[in-house]
Image 1 (cartoon, helix red, strand yellow):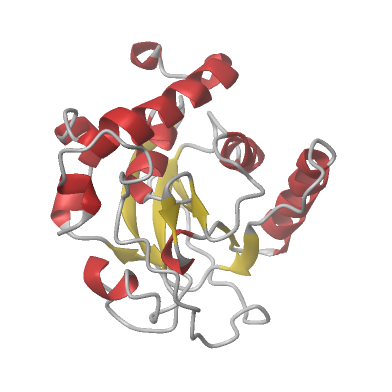
Image 2 (image 1 turned 90 degrees about the horizontal axis):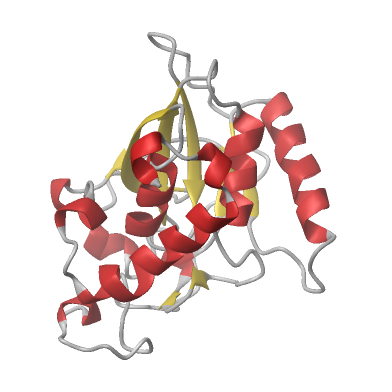
Length: 219
């Protein structure tokens, strides 16, 4: 059983998954050509990994201009990853989100600033109590302009830290949608110990830091 289902209020015990820290075995995608997702019905898509996808989904869904956020897997070398397989650390995939947004209301640069501002950017292979390659931080770019934006924001953020920033910057290849029960997990499971002790506090810290970006019903 995963520790999120244990009745425990110890932060050490609370985790989005099993915390496997096995080294990733993956193809080198760093130099691959990025896949660009076309704008459809006026909505664009961006992809981020930053620890447990339950937390990241809730953060981006609170932002004005974001239409929907989907939890899934990306950054690996296997097809059709599942929650169980990604948690082994052998697929190379990280828990990620697909952010569907209106570029007329919010731009990609702001989404990247939200990304860095809603996590501990120096934590390697995880966020908070979630540790393992499946929780590593990744920002995916779809073209050269996005890559340049990411690198510029990273340089600005890095000035505030003594340690290197941990997020990988990778060309987007493929996003695999997670199982249905992972979607809107925080909203659908408000009493879950992990949600109460990890996810909601992380969301609240983000809201305090970026109040001007929030949807009216997210305050």
